[in-house]
Image (cartoon, rainbow, N blue to C red):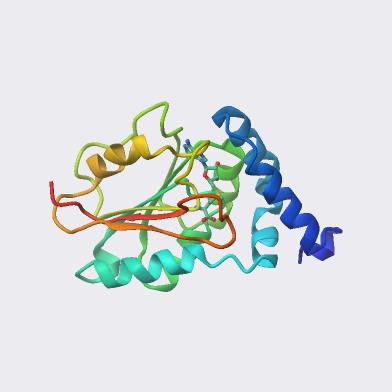
Amino acid sequence: MAQEKGRNLSEVQTRIGASHNINDLDRKLQFYGRWAPDYDQDVAALQYRAPRLAVDCLTQALPGPPHAALILDVACGTGLVAAELQARGFLQLHGVDGSPEMLKQAQACGLYQHLSLCTLGQEPLPSPEGTFDAVLIVGALSDGQVPCSAIPELLRVAKPGEPCQPPLHSPTFPSSHHIGLSTPWAK
Ligand SMILES: C[S@@+](CC[C@H](N)C(=O)[O-])C[C@H]1O[C@@H](n2cnc3c(N)ncnc32)[C@H](O)[C@@H]1O
């Protein structure tokens, strides 16, 4: 699909590669803002599988029926993680992201019950302690994006209980840890 809009695979790779050199958070969020309308088709061209892999982990880690679980998707982007969650029966979905343009795409996908603008590392999550049955962060836990120092904030809003899945590696965004899955943490 990237080719339909005139970009071939190597152009998409170049675009993503350029983002790896942006370490300033405000500039990175501006980059994501410009990318938002094309994000889904570009990462599809790269066979980006991180959302599916993260939701695979969640389904194994989370006890109980999926429809009963309240999930927070941190750095939700356009809503690719929500699409995977919905396909597995997770229907109570909240999302946060630091890019208004990404949130506009997420709103359009119609899968989130609640969306908030929030820049992790600069401000707290807009939820009380112990709100969510699981907190997911996919494709965003890295230098220049969501810093590891924000992990305690992710854990704060998760219900205490279950262990945390460590970050996994994503070949599409290879510079750092890019799939973090936080299910309720034993506090
Ligand atoms: C590679 S996209 C991943 C989006 C989605 N999770 C996915 O897997 O398709 C990274 C997302 O993180 C968001 N982001 C980056 N740094 C952030 C921060 N510090 N706080 C909130 N969102 C951030 C960007 O706006 C972007 O939507």
